[in-house]
Structure formats: C-alpha cells, structure tokens
Image (cartoon, rainbow, N blue to C red):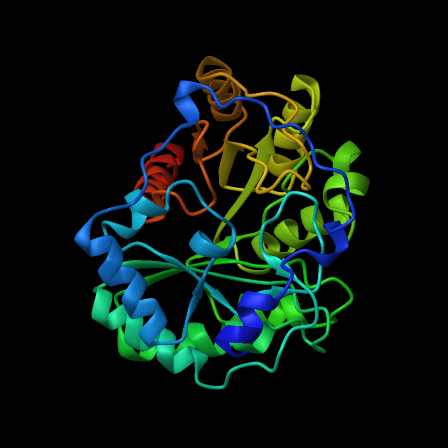
Length: 317
C-alpha cells in the first residue's frame, strides 16, 4: 500500500458511525512521557528501512518509548490490516494485502542489527488465509533460528479459528514462548471480542501445552472494561486448568472515543492483589500492573520465567 493510500485509509470503518464516548480522566499512575531518545528513533528507522510493522505503533502501546529506547520491539507480521474488528484494538481493520515473501528475511536482518536476545512476534488476524498465517510464523521462526540461533523467540498468535492444522504447524516450529491472549472475561466477549470464542482460545493454550510441555505458555487479559473481581479470578482458574505458565494483567486504555469505553481505572493496589491471587494459584510468572502489556519487559521476564521453572522442578525432586 502506498503512503498516500495509507494516509487516506480509514483505520476503523466499522466504528466510523458509532457515537463518541466521553473519556475518563487518566490518573497519575497511567501517564507516560512521550518518546524522545536517540535509540528510539534509531529503532523506528530500522523498522521502516526493513518494511516491518510493529504492534507497538499499530496498537498505540503506552510503553513504546521505554521499550524502543532499549531496542525491544514487538514485530507484527502478515501486514498491518486485520480481518477482525475487536472493540478494544487500535490495529486497522479491512481487507489485507498479499503476504510479503521477504518478511521473514527482513525480520531476521532487523533482529541481527538490533542485537536482540529475545524477540516477540505477533500478527494481525488473517481470516482470509487458508492457514490463518501459520506458515509465515513458521518461516519467521526458522529464519531467525538460522541467522541468530541464540535469540529466544516468543510468539503472540491469533486464534487460528476454523483453520485445521494451523495451530499444530506453529507448535511444531517450537517457539520458546507461545502466547495467546484471552483478552477479557467470557461475559464481555460478544461486545469486546465478537470474532473470537473464549473457550476456543482456552483450548488453544491447552493444546499447545499438551502437545509440547517444554514450550512456555502465556496469556493476558485487560481490566477496566466492566469485569468483576470474581470473573477475573475465574479466568485465572481457567488458565491454570490449561496449565498456562505466565499471566499478564494490564489496564485497558481506549485507543479512540469510538472504541469500547474505559469503565474504570483499576488501582495499583488492586493489580498487586491480582498478582498475589494469581501466584497463589500456581502460575510460574505473573505480571500485573496498570501499564503491563503482553510483551512489556518480555526479555527479562523470559529469563525469570525459565529460572522459576528450574526452581520448581528442582523442588519437586
């Protein structure tokens, strides 16, 4: 897509006629500084030069300045247009273009140039593809392993709904971490995540762990959408029933006034309580703060995740 077409494109045509919501004033603990560092701009230029998209930009992540300042970016493959229209997400929706055959190579070049020790790869939903984009995930993993074999790889995938064999294909590529977010509590799926099914996503996580127990599994939810404490605790139990290793919980922030409104800002104390509750349920790792996002601090978290598993295995002997 040309730059002119990109500028003229309506990011969320399905929301264009929705009424605007009056935003809640953000509390102090949510506010972040605008990115200004030299390394941030260097990282941004590298992504542009290699024709790569990042979820950091497309999803308007509040942590982009902090992460890019240390050369940690979450690459979004399979283009920048999603076939779903989730009420919480800032990624553009519409009809995607063709899959870029050079994307795995360009990604591998960027990983090498940035010297990344841990990489997070995510994607838009590609319901238009027979395999949902599974093959492109595999090609990216294989190319990175060939060029920077010491780089650990974390993937954050779509649900591959109605794509037989797609999930198994990605599992066989053996990512170090397989992340698939439940996003919210099941009661809110019809309005917040209408194109997905809660128990399908839960089964996906269970299938990954049953197929290859050595792969770390990870999932996250947003709070502040109108969920109750009891519902959040039930999601924790559901994740543990699927043997999910790592749970992330963060504050939902509405990308625009036409997205789902923020119901409330959850306090840091409540996030700390959620973390204590989750740890008591047996997760290997829990990240629960207002600004927690799926790949926030993913590199250091992976090191701790691996250490926690080793400690638990040693204690079980």
